[in-house]
Structures are given as structure tokens and as C-alpha cells.
Image 1: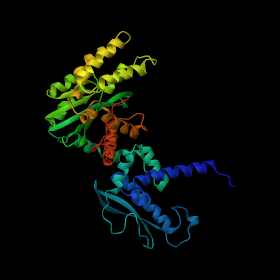
Image 2: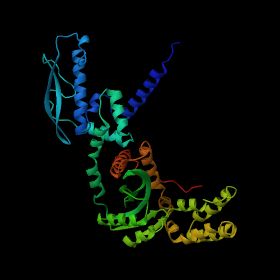
Image 3: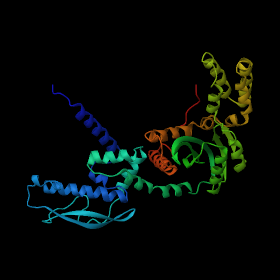
Image 4: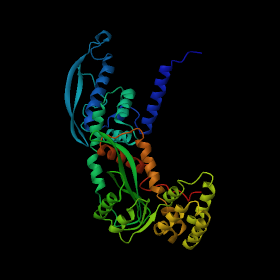
Length: 402
């Protein structure tokens, strides 16, 4: 049995994974690389055209010892190509006999399609860093593209993000979920924790849409107040139900902008807070008794079960019952609605599921260099999730926990 070269085998497996990843995105050959953004296109195409001429002539540039043809290179000529980002100049190599007919940019071709732009966006949206994309293109295609070029290319998405963030919204939303997810960003030479505020709206016809994502400091009710006013300015006249976590002051912020909106505080967050300091010996039984409260058929039954819970556990864990009663007006909103609506609104799991999908994309990036770079990747990830039908149309809802 022949020996396996570990280094060669590792490289083969790595190439197989890279090929599979690119094939899943629709990139199957050099033609697929044609669709990068304006700055990137020039570099990619020039390298590719040089490679085509190498193949045509049978030897690489300056490798005269392997030259077996009378034909040779004869400089370059400039060609203007139209792209979605405007006109661009590409340097086309020539051969002395005039026999070279490039495939990447054909002789009479005057424009590039949008595919190359979509490919880099797709790779970036799936969580690949600029270094990853550079490595993928280099290893699969043998083309060199710098990470700074890729960064400049993806930066062109920022004006689109700003437009999306300011787009008009529906006048009325049945439900709006609001939550924050945290990332590390470099700021003034230090690494700080930033909150990305996310709002997802459910329209009256059931269609769900990410209303916006905003980068700010650690989550605060004051920042949410600004976001709510922004939604108002973008055309949202009313929200029937707002589903939020237990952030202090959140309720006041919502009532200041949308005084008629009913507020449903996330029951799951309340449960987590309630059981944080419960002994592991008691947790199973206590959770069963607590479920009798939030899983009751109606509010009177829930209040009766809360009385029963406090009679049993009040002396040992007095703060649990006190907390549920203090937050009861916003914890009990879902009892007003039928089961299908209850399942939707009693928890912010809908938006947390979306957040988890964002984390999968960003896990390769431990620190973002700027707020814009963070927002850029999240927007592209959101568009990719939306395209796959997981965000804008249906963001998963979990059933009542056991």
C-alpha cells in the first residue's frame, strides 16, 4: 500500500473543502471569478488573462528555457469594460503573431455581467474574512487579490446599507421584536464591546421583515428610544404588540413613542433570571411549578398558580415571586390572545434565532476594525439569510419550553 504524504493529503482535503464551499455559492470556474467588484475585477482579470496567454504560448513570463514556440508576448493594450460600478480599464496581453484570443475578456466584449459582484458578496456574507476570500481565489484559481482590495470592494455596500436603514416602512405592524446582540469592535486603539440593536417586524399579513440594525454602545433604553423615534419617522404609525427583554427602562421608551402599544416582556428571559440562583437540587421541581404559572390556560389561573408557587417556594426563594408580580403587567399580555398568537409573542426567541444565524456568519471575526465593517457584514449576512427564506419570510418560533 503506497504511503500517504500527510502534507499533500492535508492540502488535498483543504482544496476539496474550498471547492465545495465555492461550488455551494455557484462559483465553479474562472468565469465565476469574473464577477468581482470594480477594483477587484481589474486585478483578477489581468492575472487571468496573463495565465491564458501562458497556456497559449506554453511557457510563463520570463521562463524562456521552456519556450517551444516562435510566438511570444508583445506587450498589452487597454480595454474599457462597462460594469455595474461604472466603466473600468483592463490591461489585455498580446502575442506577436496576433493569434491569442482570450476567453475571460473576448475581443469584442464591452461589458461585464453582475455575477462577479454577487460572488464576492456571497462569500463575504457567508462569514469569510477578506483573508479567506483572498486565499480561496489564490488556491483555487491561482489569482492574487489583496485583502485591502476586497475590503474596498465590499465597502461599496455601505451606501446601500444606509439607504436600507432609511427606507420607508409599513404604517402598522402586528408585532415588533426588539433585541440586541453584542460584538467586539476596535475604537480609538482599544477593543470595546458594542451592541447591535435589531428590530424585526411582523406585518398584518404575517410577512416578517428586519426593520433595521443599529450599532451603538452597550444596550440601553435611551438608545432604543432613538431607534423607536427613527421607526416613527420612517412611517411606522403604530405597533400592536412589542416583544422585548427585561431591560430597565425599555417599557418607558416604547410608551413614549407608541403609547397604545401592548408590551410583552420575554417570559424566557424572566425564567432565566428567576432560576439563576436556584439550587440544582430544587431546579427541576421549581421549574415544574413555575411552568404551571406561565403555561396556564388564562390569566386568573396563572395568578392562582403564582399564589401556590409563592406558598411553596416563597420562604426559600422570595425574590422569584416578587419579580414575577413586579413585571406581571408586561409578562401576562399574551394571555389575552389565542394559542397561535401566544406562541408567537410570549418570547423573543424569534429574534434570538435570527441572532444565532448572524453569529454563525461572524464567528470567524473576533474583533471588527470599525462600526461600519461590523454593520457591513451583518447586512450582507442578513441579505443572505433573507435570500434563503429564513429571515424576511419566516424566522423560526419555538414552542413553550418544558
